[in-house]
Length: 220
Image 1 (cartoon, one colour):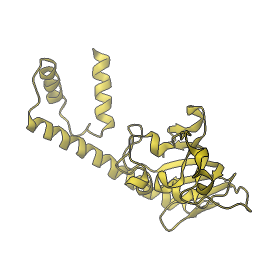
Image 2 (image 1 turned 135 degrees about the vertical axis):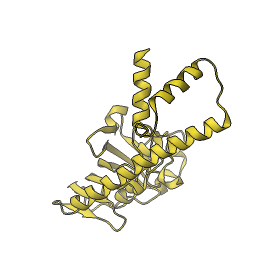
Image 3 (image 1 turned 120 degrees about the horizontal axis):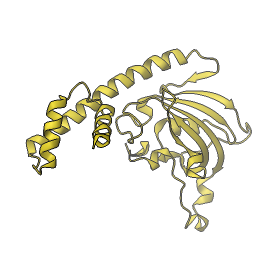
């Protein structure tokens, strides 16, 4: 029983509600819920407001942390900042004579995604295969970078919240988080080549934006 309460408490804290909720009231609600009391429309609306308030508080903190980090990181050796605010560092330039992907091209990538505190939230290796997808189907920060990268390139991306998931993040990514990706462009396949019968029956190995519950950038 204690463990369930501990899990519940940590979930509320992760939602940014630790300063908003009164523990005694939470315990009373928990007891009444276990006793079978149904939620009223007013109860549901109040709970939604609390969740939104907690999410917005976390997002405000994360946006500020992202701004501070990016401002300092902009002067780091080898870091380029684009007009959109995306920052990248070229680890390996790739094949200079080959063309960068077009928005409708299919690419295959290896990647590792981390939060500002170093927490890893996704890694293509953990899925047992590289991710394959259309360039225009992923978060804005990835799309911008991929259109600049050459086949074989390895970049480190520093993705501001507005170019990542922003408030539509999956459960393992706090809202409005800055995202740091190590991204390798392993393969590019032209959309014109893929438009024929050979493409039928192929399945995408989903990239982060498609694996997560959040909508891909192209649909936002």
